[in-house]
Every structure is written in C-alpha cells, then in structure tokens.
Amino acid sequence: MRTYFIIVGSLILIFYCFGCRNSKEVVYEDSQFKKTIMVDSLLDHYVSKYRVFINYFDDTTLFPRCYEKGELITTSSSEWTSGFFPGILWNLYLYSQEGEFYNAAVKWTNSLLPECENTSTHDIGFIVNSSFGAGYEISYNEYYKDVMLKAARSLASRYNSGLGCIKSLDDFENFKYPVLIDNLVNLEILFKAWKWTEDDQYYKIAYSHALTTMENHLRKNFSVYQLVDYDPIKRTPVYRGTFQGYSENSTWSRGQAWGLYGYSMIFRETKDRIFLDQAERLANFIINDPYVKINYIPFWDMDTPQIPDELKDASAAAILASALIELSTFQETSNAEKYFRIGENIIKTLGSKDYRSGLNENSFFIVKHCVGNYPGKLEVDVPLIYADYYLLEALLRYNTAAKIRYDE
Image (cartoon, rainbow, N blue to C red; front, side):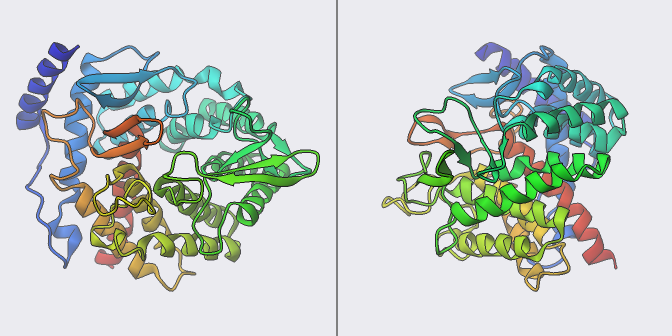
C-alpha cells in the first residue's frame, strides 16, 4: 500500500505539471481577494490530485475517509462519511467539466443506492444528499430525485411527534433517544422532498426538529451540546453532553460548526427569521473567541486547558467557512460583510501551506490537520474526507458570492 501511494504521488506531480490548467502561486493580500488569492489555483489543486486518484482507485464499493500513518482508510456505504467522496467528484465535474469526474461520480453515487432505504440512522441525509443530491443538482437526472425522495421517507420515519424531533442513532451506548447537533444538516433532504412533492409533512418534521434542537441543544452563551438524550415517555431531555469534546460541558468546535451550518441552511429553506438569528448567534460565539480570531481555525475543542498548545481542527474550519459564506449571502443579515470576510480568511488559511497537503502528501486529500474524535483517539491530526468536501463547497460558494460582490 505504501509503495502504491508513493507511485501515485509521483504521478500526481507529473500530472500536475502537465495537466493543471492555469494554476498560479497563491498570493495573500487583503484587498481584491478574488483577483489575488487565486481561488481557482486551489480548485485546480483538487482537480489534479483527485483526477490521478480516480484513475488508479476504482473499487466503488469502498469510500475514502482519511489518510493515516501512510495508509488510505476506506469505509462501506453505510458509514456516515460515504457520500462525501462522490459529492466531491460531482463538484469537481461542475468546476472542471471533465468527463472523467462525471463518470466516477456516477459510479460511486450508484454504489450508495441501498442506503436510501436505511431507516436506522439520521446519517441518511449526509450519505444520500451529498451524493445523489449533488448529482441531481448538476445533472437533473430524475432517477436521482426518486432516490432522494426514498431517503427523505427513510429519515422522516425516525421522527417522534411527541418529542418533536428525529432520533439520530439506534442502539447508541445507553441512550434512549439520542439527538445529535449535526442532525440539523440532514434536514436539508426533507426540505427538498417538501419542495418536490408539496407534501407539508416533510416541512413540518424538519421545522419541528429545528425548533426542538434550538430549545434543548444550546447553552445560554449559544455554544452547543453535541448530544441531547430524551425520555420518549416523559418527553423531556434527560441528558445533555459532548462526548467528542474535552468534557461534557465543553464546546466541541465541529459541533458548533454543524449547528451554524444547519441553521443557515434552515433559514435558507424556511425564510423564518428565528433561524437566521440563531445562526448568527452560533456564528458570533465561535468567531469572537479570542483564540479563533488569530487565524479563524478553531482548536478541536474551545475549552481545553491546553490552549494555546492544542491541536486545531481544520475540518471544523472548513464547515465554518462554507456556512459563513452562505450566511453572508442573506440580505436579512446586517453582518454580511463580516461573515464574508471571515469565510474568506478561513479559505486563505486552509489554502496555505500550513493546511493544504502538497502534491506528494496525504494521497489525494487536500486539507490536513483535522481531528475526528480526540477523546476516542480516532483520526487525530489527519486529513478527513469531509474537510475536503466542505472546503470545496466553500470555494464554489465563494466564487459565486465574490462574482456578485466584485463584478457588480
């Protein structure tokens, strides 16, 4: 395996030199960012590394997750991260218009088909929306829409009307009815189903879950709990905590980013001001942290006593960047410029040599220095597929938003 990636790394370098289109050295300046940072250079970096990888790795039953200790770690289709790789391929096709990305995206997406009827997890949103959802938005293939609708029905089946929320996971430790903060992101598939079918039940379920999460997942300072467990009979929370953070009452950075991302999307879909206000509160909590302000890459947990001698989490930063750039596009916010500039600064940092993997580094992965589960000693200081996904999404969102801002 190590020999394989040494060969692939060399091929990446050769391919990059001869095949990368108009790549330029990244220059960081404060003014006219779009013209100087060369966002396309980072996008071309994605194209070059992922292009070589899909030409040499063709087992579409395996889904890349991370690169650790010189080995590519893959998962099955049922893992929550499986949809991000085909989602990246769809977005790289959107950017490059290269047919090999389209063909690869179709193959890996189709391998996820059985998951649309998976009723055992809320992660059906991550899995299917990132793959089939992206495929439909780009290709308008009605088959992909049908798969999305099946997945929406699967997710909706996990809703408890008495509690007003969707159960995240089955048989998860000793919890009775666990609900994770990232469940908010999965609601997007329900909003899409509502628009396509005009079935108000999808909207009502998603809206109810968003409100219930707002009531129970947030502390008074607008930091978030990762998990709330409910008693289905008493219909009340019986536990609030953060198992992937430093402590149960600490602020796990990726959880905060999930909450911001989720409520930004929910406002986009509902236009209900309470969700925009909520997104802004979550955003302000994390971006106003004095340590986060240094380069807007948060530590893996915002409350560890080892700060500032602590690991950063670039995956949280990638999600944060994408969410902030979307947040900046809402006319209803008075903080649009601030959110846009901070999203811009995160992209600058993630695109720098400190966080961007080189041509012969970390296989095809782009973003390094991510933290998956620090307390569990899993995926610590490694590249992660969802960091690549959300940075790529942030770059594409940035290009769209920057065109409006700079070309008007």
